Length: 115
Image (tube, rainbow, N blue to C red; front, side):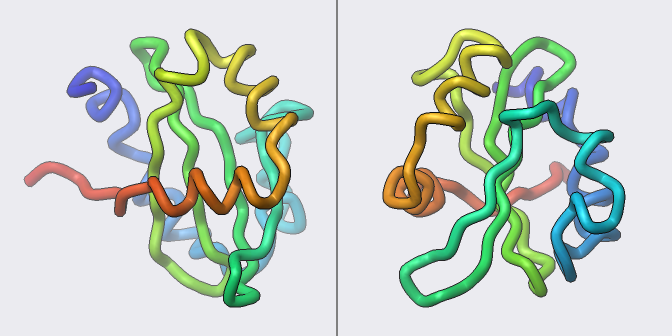
């Protein structure tokens, strides 16, 4: 997990700069971050609008990154128990319904940088 964290250190800075003020694809970031099945939009139980995007670390670990549109908080959930690689993680994400996405969101932890 430490290797994954080292490989993804720049993401919070970039995500906070984007700040999820509007959807990533509306700002032209969809192609830069994601393939066809690497990002999902959904609503939480309180009606908040979220995006979930897969991110592969430099050591091959895959995490699911959550950002609430209009908020700067970034959450992260490792995908190592569901998928051995990015391709499998894309398949898992594509098959999730909104209830599944909300479950993964509930399991996500705030993104923090060491130091």
